[in-house]
Image (cartoon, rainbow, N blue to C red; front, side, top):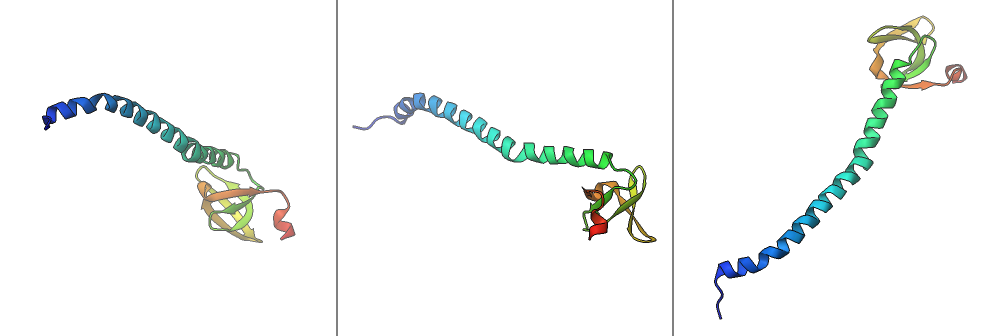
Length: 109
């Protein structure tokens, strides 16, 4: 017995509503997972780096993104002057400072 195509499609439609709800819930769960594993940690790191940059002051021992360690000699609005050896100073962007070291770290190395 051959059924018309419209009759077969009409029979399959009610199950599709439940499948659509399941897909929506799955999409929401996947977005929540991505938020807590990727987006939130990245924004937390950015906030910590902004706070680190804002708190830079003269005399802090820092490491730049390029791996240069030194002591801050002068702090400007966009740049800091870092003394990497006696009478050797370089000027780097504030955002290039990666880490602030504990006091006395440079003397011990």
